[in-house]
Length: 92
Image (cartoon, rainbow, N blue to C red; front, side, top):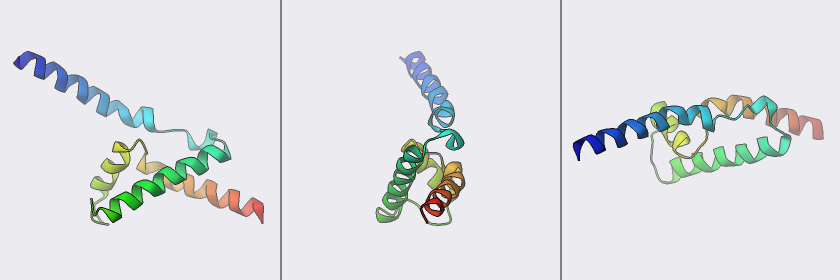
């Protein structure tokens, strides 16, 4: 039984460590529609964090963890912001 628990923990550790690679889309190669949907997902995660008071505003580790838990990469937020600004600028 102990060996089974060790195997399960090892496998879950591998999956969690590779989650960043699987969840991180290449924002530069996304279509405008995909960037918009990804930004909405990021916004939903932020809203959930603040409304349920899951993390403090200065706790980056907690915020990153919540993003990862929801399949969104925190480090993509700047690239998504830039793409949104370019998309909005092209409308005007």
